[in-house]
Image (tube, rainbow, N blue to C red; front, side, top):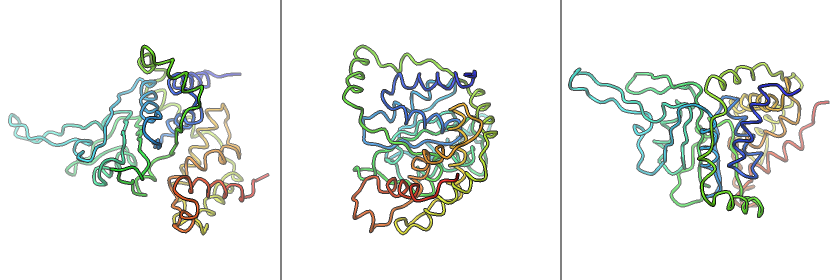
Amino acid sequence: MITTTTHRLRELQQTVESVIRGKSEAVHLAIVTLLAGGHLLVEDVPGVGKTTLAHTIARCLDCSFQRIQFTSDLLPSDIVGVSIFNQHSGEFEFKPGPIFANVILADEINRTTPKTQSSMLEAMAEGHVTVENQTYELPRPFLALATQNPSEHHGTYPLPESQLDRFLMRVRMGYPSFDEEKEILRQQTHHHPLEQITPVMNGDDVLDLQEEIKNVRVDDALLDYLMEIVTATRNSEMLDLGVSPRGSLALRRAAQALAFTEDRSYCIVDDIKRLVVPVFGHRVAVNSRYSSRNGAGNEADSVLAEIVRSVRVPI
């Protein structure tokens, strides 16, 4: 029996896929990130739909939305806001920046300087920002959807590990297939499908779902399995940096959200397996020796896939 919640989540998936063709897995993981209360990093070469995915999800939610285009001259105050002196009152007044919205599209986040990148750390981790010793709460739900170009592209500043760790997941889009791209060409002959998107959820719906997800059961055997994978990342000779406790918590929360989207009140082994790469891929660092043998690209994903294969599955 399909519940009302399941029907709504399927409607959300189908609405996003009406714009993002042929990327069901990326869309599903983006929805899982939203429901888990995390933030999403979308990484790939320019022009494959990173910004469109983020914009489409924002359109599907009846929430406040701001897009921030990250450039080399962007300042932290351009994001969080600034205090301005009011001559009439004789006091400084805080003018909120674009970070004060339910959904933030941080476009090409690695094109700005580390100082400006770090201005989003507090917002992503704590749900508030501090300006001149005054703390301001951000609206809830709060979702940061960031896009970035591969670090080897000219004019980029790689995100530090501390900020990468704040993203629940990293997904890659990839090029569409021949038929999918042909359909995109047909679809956008007269207008962009994004223009026809109408919201399917509001902020209260999202908050309610995020609370329901906490009730999804994760057995001790699955927690042991998860921790064996985490421990393997810390002991692997191929990795210089393993997964932190924040990463462990992220995988458990993402697994609960994934089970919820599939109308289950419990997690299974496949939930953990499916999420190891998108949740851990940006949290580990491959040592230079292994990287040099395999070249630039998806070394971390390959190491994690091998770790998953080597860890015994609970019966």
